[in-house]
Length: 143
Image (spheres, rainbow, N blue to C red):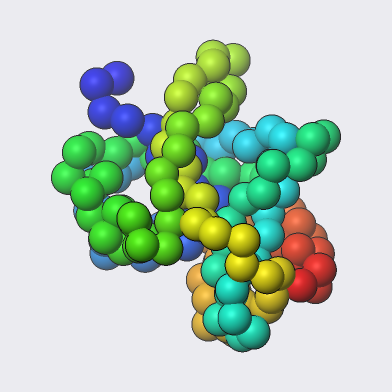
């Protein structure tokens, strides 16, 4: 595969939003981001999803095959480099280890609640991907 793999755990889980921003991206499967925990950080009712390192935890993620054009569109949509930084993580998919792009919130913003609209976009993504929505609910309540 000459394209890169993007591991979506936030708004990128929502297929409708991804098609709008990255029309050539293809969902290829699901995985878990091991030793990470989902967190919502930022202002009250405006916090955004990120992942924090947390040994023994995991975050469900939807894997997308993306082109360089998709990646440039993702950078703009997600807010890189101002809000998020890009990182590479090892994931397993179909029994193989591979590198995947993730976006991680910059700075140590406080845990807080996302807006109802933002949460609904993530919830739809979780449901369509077949992920347990309890993870999403639990982390939202932790804020």
